[in-house]
Image 1: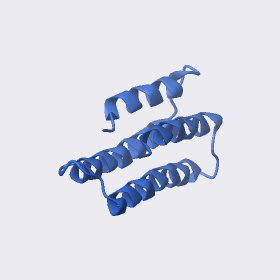
Image 2: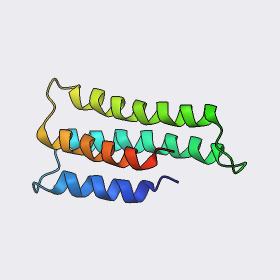
Image 3: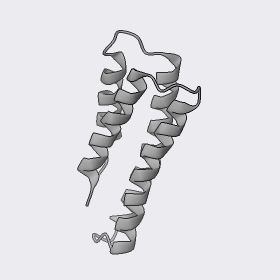
Image 4: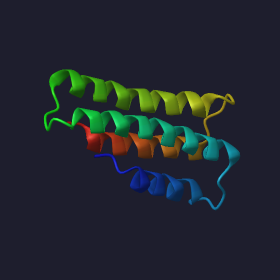
Length: 101
């Protein structure tokens, strides 16, 4: 099960690493949290019967891809992906790899 608090804490630490959390980073963090909450809701539904079938597994994989793509789109909104935004996305990517079934 996705631990939203754990992921968001890790992302907050990455964002604060340089001592400043920019408005763009704050917005990206909010977007990511929304995506992860949607993923967790679907994950809970898939696990209700104790079995994650192939269709559910595919949907979860698509959702992980969607989260990463959505984060990139959000980061690119101002035309520039900063090193800090890139680090946040890399952290999400590493976390998503741990969720693969």
